[in-house]
Image 1 (cartoon, helix red, strand yellow):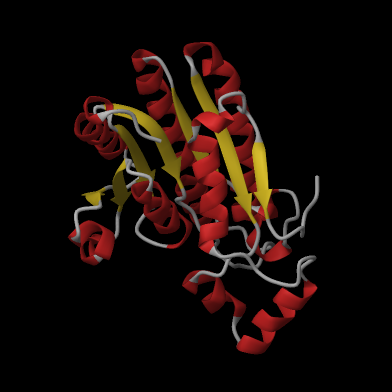
Image 2 (cartoon, one colour):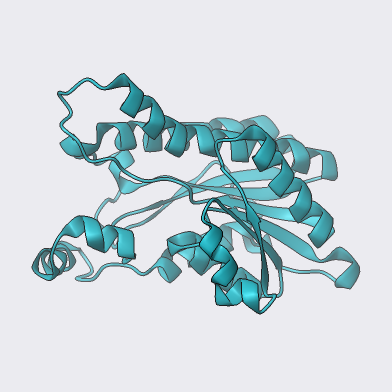
Length: 248
């Protein structure tokens, strides 16, 4: 993950203040990489990783082009070379699919797909200029196995996969790799809150092919692999981290 001190590798994680993004920040900083957490949650300043100096924090709205550009520039300046960019920004809005609400649809698409577009394309342009790098986007099993109560989320996460593949093809010759992780149900506070009860959570675990639900660290491990030199021939791919709930 790192070179010598003059070539310290930098990774910027958008949405890195919690869940999968935070787990990735912990793993990467443990490997000695400079990690910048770019997140709209100001409470990230209280994270042990930030307070200890293992990671830095930059307040950033991933749907704002200027803020995204500023986060990438800061990561490059502090780390000497921007080797990795990850975006885990996203979330589902549960609703009646037959109620037409264009404003809500646009908010959800902006949060999930616009943010991925801004982060990935901005990072790709910067990395092409420096001779390469690795970008990891985040989709969801709902992209291919949707549920009726989250059509905006499913549609936008399917769009993230198409975006990833198209961008990977566009910048492959510049040494920039673009891949995607697509988690299934992951043991995060947000997912547990959406589940509703311990009994329902246990039911989800029992229905899993592996009989368990993955941790954020499980998904973060796939992200770290895609950022690593060991994945230098991997681009335009989707890694499904879902305990076998979807097998393409």
